[in-house]
Image (cartoon, rainbow, N blue to C red; front, top):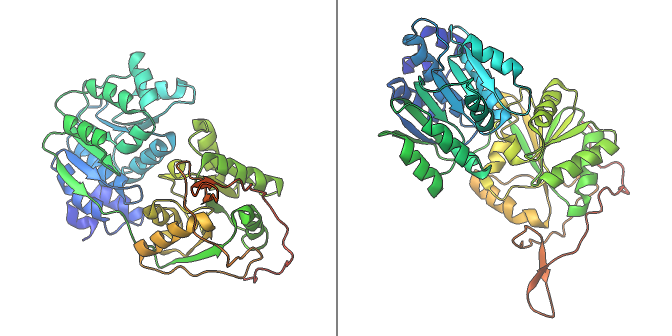
Length: 422
């Protein structure tokens, strides 16, 4: 199937061609025809499946085909949980709709409202917003949703995780009853399913199976290393093996900050991005990384959802995620559009089970690289307690207890010739 098979109008097809798009992803092929027919839609799809284009393309077409005289009424609202996602969604609308006279705007909190307010007063057809700033503008009388034609709730499960569900319900009460509603979520916990049932009218259901394969253009490898040696290994890789930009994934916010601080002390420019950072700090870190000002971006999975960086060649998993599908999405940040990429995963005792599950999911045995100073053959898979701490046996009680092993950080290796130069 090609985009030309989906009855998409020429201005959008021309824009897609400029973006290098030819074949729709599964969710695009399933969702676009139904949305063009103005049906409600319930989509189960993770970030990285092409979901934004799946709703942006038909929204642009529907609004362009029934566009009348310009007005200040907002016609389409896309509600998304974070500033980063909101900005990227607006960028997608701008890219696909570059040949259409539709006005697009993104609004989010954490910045002064002056410029956003001024743009709203000039008139906006498509508004991308985060819940807090949208409610703030509604309360001030700057925004009215009474003439809205299309409502998109994106990343609904993440709205729940971030505590935005009550804000979302307040916004839904302000929407006109006659509208097209598009609802997207990576998972469908009971509360999200209940919310979907309450706002959708006889929806078409589109489900995309979580991605379970990795691009052949991505060179994958595993480095067996003790937990306390990971910072040292990362520092040496970045100093002696990789000179380009690297996206590093950390399991926790605290870990991301610690990694970034350690790299900075070693004169490697690095910034961390996670949910505890302000929106300004997150966006500045992302912009610095995209521009090359910052060489290493350390991110948690939540903060990294939706990050799309062109020509990124290296991804390092400082820890493997407990969710195997996450590995595919992480390393999918590189090797895009047929380009070559490299993924390196640090595996300690806590990561062994995750490695086994990941390899089972992708159907591939990931090669182990032993040519580094911190390699160990002595890893033993460990169980974890409820706080994700390693557990060891307690001889006196027969019950496991958390280990008290400290992360001692960087250790200088005895052997300095640990990497073969390429």
